[in-house]
Every structure is written in structure tokens, then in C-alpha cells.
Length: 346
Image 1 (cartoon, rainbow, N blue to C red):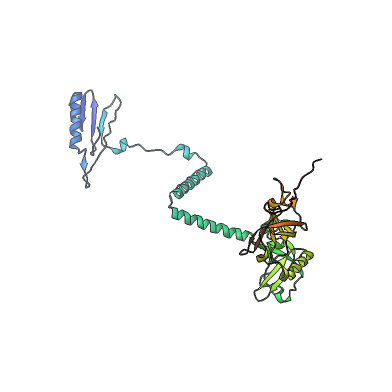
Image 2: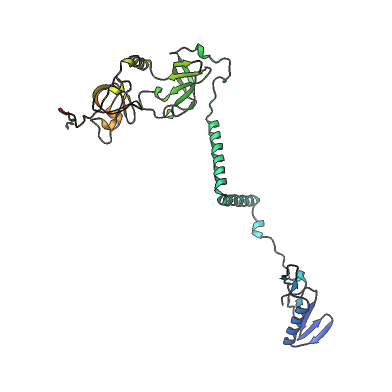
């Protein structure tokens, strides 16, 4: 009952079979034999160029008892069913349809990215990173009070050292900040020239792009178009100038030995320790854990303050890096009495 290619009809009524206009009386076995013969005659398997065979369908329809019962028909229009559209999809709101289509497209893109080669993925991520960096740089761009090529800007030869200017912070770096004071070039405010009250590891801890600050001119180099700035008070700068003048009389690092006892003054306290002025060519570094009053949980500012005089010993000297490491605890291998710190409880 499977294959045929011709438009022929078999009718069955009371064990009679009708072929065209001829009616023959047969039993069920004879009917089956006739149908099988018709299938073979009509070429159920038709060879194609690729030496394969294609099937042709045969439809068998049962009619009502009043008329003939159609057993075999080769009319494709009779056995084909028209598929109706999905009623649920057609009943959806257009906005909902668009959202479903959009989600499907995004899902397809995600699945495609999962299958992309590693080199293409690396290249795509690098381009996204560069694009994000450019956008971030644009967002941090600060409007200058004067245009960079404005004629109203002051020339470097007209700027006097020691004058105070009100400037705008343009950008931040790991080593300082660039400030526009209305001159030909931006001045550099080093991270060490921001404040002496607290240790500033990065300029963003104290400054932000666009801030208005008062700075003092310390150095100007007209040939290289460079200018150095500071936010430190004037008396701090005077003390540093005096220290620089006495540089020739300072102790060289080669004259310092291990366990040498020195007296010094704390010049700067950081989050990890303090810089001590020893009269040497370089300031010494004292870690707060090497302080005799150190206890677990204490902070450097609780133990040391700027201006305190302290007795310390040399624990290491690095002539290559020009560094001096100190300790405020008396070394154990030194002869003589030792002072022990005791806390008296009430």
C-alpha cells in the first residue's frame, strides 16, 4: 500500500473491485494480489541517476457505506495535509515576538563565541580592552581654564621660583600629578611633595583630576619645558634646603658599619615606618616593628611622630641602592647594659 505514480482508483463494495469502468467480483485474497500486481506494474521503485530508488506514496481512503470505498489513489493532493500556522505564535504580541527573536539571536551569538578559536577570542578581547581604555581616558579628560595654545598663557621665563599659583589637577600617575597653573607646560607635583602629615602611596589618595589646589614653584627648566611643584609649607621647604646645604659635611655610607649607634630625628612617618635623619648622605629607614614599644595591633603613627629624636642602630647598609636600614632595639651581641621597656599598670 505504499507506492504508485499514476492517477488510478480502486473501489471496494461488497467484495467487488472496480478498476476504471470494469467491476470484478473477488474475495479478499484476490484483492490483495491485484493490489500487489498494480504496485509492481506502476513502478513502485523507480531508479534514478544516482542508482538509488525513491518511494512513491499510495493513499488508501475508506469511504462511507453508501458509495464505493477507495482503496488506492495516486493523487498527492488527497493524501497531503496542509500544515496550519502555529496559533500560539500568531496570537503573541508583536513586541513579545521581537523580544523572543532578539533573545534567540543573542543566544546564537553567545554559542558562536564559545566555539570561536582561541586566537580570535584573544584578538577580540584585546580590542575590547583598548576600546575601554580609550573611553576611560576620554571620561577623565579635564577642561583646562585656558586652551593649550592660548596666547594668554604665561611663559616659563616669566615664572619666578617660590611663587604660589592656583592650578587644576589634569592627570594622575604613579609618581605624582600634573597640574595646569596657566603656563606653557604642566607642572609635576611629586607624590612626596603633597603632604608630610600622612604617607601618600599614590596621588589618588589625596587628589583627583579636576581639583583646584595651591602649589608653589620649586624648579623651572625652560630648555626642557619642565616645572616642579610642591604643596608643602614654606618652613618645611626651608628645612630641606638647609639639609641640602649641609650635604658636603654628611657621613658617607662607606663610613657606616653594622650595629653602629646613631641618634636621629624622625622626618617622615609612613604606613610602614619612618624616615630618620641621621646626618648621613641618605636618611635611614626604621620599620615600625623594629620600634622598642611595638606591640601587635599598634600602628606607626601611634609609636612615632615627626620631630621625635630616637636612638637607633644600623642593621644594614646597601651602597648600591644607597639605603640605610635601622632598628631601635639594641642588638643582642653588643656588650654593656640593656634598657628594657616596662609598662606600669595602675
